[in-house]
Image 1 (cartoon, rainbow, N blue to C red):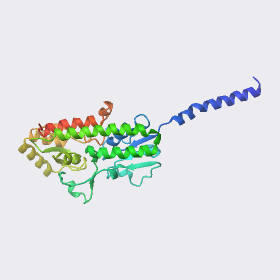
Image 2: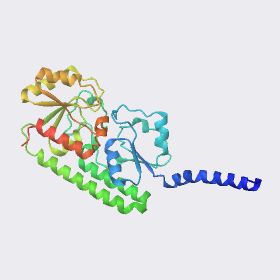
Image 3: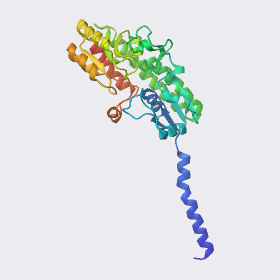
Image 4: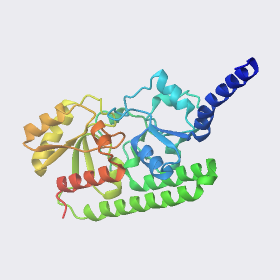
Length: 306
């Protein structure tokens, strides 16, 4: 092989070596980061396979205590779109400069203040200043509808060529939410009891919409230490109303709530607040609808609904 042909072959090999990389870059999908499971579920269902959607916090980690690592922050900043809850749920958002588009979904749903009617206040809640909002707005399917409509609109504006796909998937998702809302309304319309007992009040939006009450061992923070006064109050309530089951959630200690259950001679079960899901639930590919329907069965049993 002469020098000229050798150089040509070398240049050809170099050129060909770049083709897979360029092709990969051209076919790379946009990435969407979501700070809570509910927002992840909305985005995943709307975009289908047109984008990569990922959870900012790992499955099995509590939303209230999560702090992203420097590596996480880099991944978030590089995302094409970031969806975050707002309403004070992610303190790490403050001062963070997003490289691309970021949406505060709390600005597009109906929020409730801590202590509003239907939200049973604990000692911990009493320390919140007036105007504090409850960040668990995804527990109301109507707020999920508002969020899905807004997110779909933003996606269509960003990726107009995918408009038909996003409209179709949005409508399908909203249809599911309306059916879920109907199921809750029907199932909880006639119940013997009117109050559920939980260790952490992430359910005020749900209780307000469907007409029941919540008594919480701690307030909005699942890490708050329950007071002896609250524990005695709940034990007396369980005994007086013959409550058959009280609830805790997967991401916090069940020690206090099990102590109450033992003292009051009642059962304990898990109620999923859906800020995040467990690693096991993720392996089962459970979505917002499936988990909300599981919660409905447990709540209707606890309230002795017909």
